[in-house]
Amino acid sequence: DQKAHNAILKVLNLESVAQEPKLDEWVARATLYDTLQDEVGFCSSFTIVLSVWKPLLRPNCTALLFQVRIAMVGKYTGLSDSYLSVLKALLHASVSCHKKLVVDWVASTDLEDSTASEAPDAYKAAWTLLKGADGVLVPGGFGDRGVKGKMMAAKYARENNVPYLGICLGMQLAVVEFARHVMKFPDADSTEFNPNTKTPCVIFMPEGSKTHMGGTMRLGSRRTFFKVTDCKSAKLYGDVNYVDERHRHRYEVNPDMVPAFENAGLQFVGKDETGQRMEIIEIPDHRFFVGVQFHPEFKSTPSKPSPPFVGLIAAACGQLDQVLQDSCNGHVVAAKHKLGDSSSTPLVHQNGHAQKQANGGVANGTCHANGNGSTHG
Image (tube, rainbow, N blue to C red):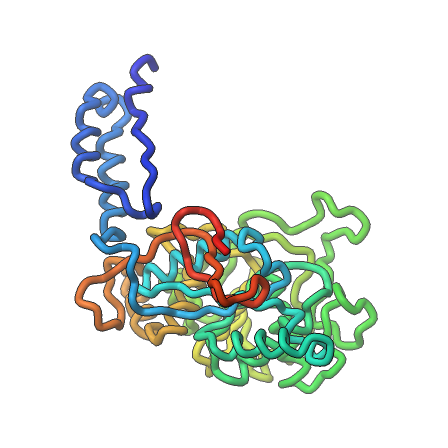
């Protein structure tokens, strides 16, 4: 215990969280702590960590040349920290595919028809960003503000074969949109927004409480079993039988409507242990249209990016087939794999927050990743 302080390493101010100078020097420094190494295996553990981190590092790690544009459609687009975990997961996935992430922040309310008459410039700007993106992501949320805009984003992605990832509410609204426009149920809705709907696609979970907010959500790590093995999601996770991901929700897809959805072409490829709670949706003949009830962003790391996010980024930049093949062969999709660009040296973009462009708005604007942990205007 008296020697434990010797294991403290100096913290440096770096341009990128991934860019650590002179890693070999750090390994050499670790070998100096002989006593600590013998007692707790510090050196071996430290060396293993560095061996995982090294493939992510390149001399010019801050200069990726090939971009991938993702439209982030949500309510709180004025502050990137509102979706910080989602943004980090996107960055991890873009690094794994050797692409520079560009996030187009789209306020979901600006996509709605009412905005066309009230604020036509904002409406036009929002749709321009959405249509210019390589992929669309609708993150989790609650409340009815902006719901129509999120469904319109899902509809656009579905009809135009644009890669789509819906998380939690983003999945539920994709289901509602599918019911309205593919299954021709114009009154389809979630009981969260319309308790009296005659076509309840998304319903309140039986074990929840509508009067007590605390401790009534389905929270934490839950197991999802793949019911369809030949699907993109299962392959992205490495053809495993199940995955454990973190949850936070009170509403779920109505299990009574699942047969009708599947007959119409919407697959529920992942379910809980009972088979009654829908966890993952896919449209098989779409480039990449995936919705997950859980929050995969919470388990994403630079060395192990979240599979659904990797799928979105890979599909958006034309690398999905290669990524699926690597995942099925047991390879971890990481920066050491070169996927599809013409650069002779794999480059890695720095991790961080959003940087607003000088000519872009806050709500509907283009933001580039930055490694200094702040937002620049």
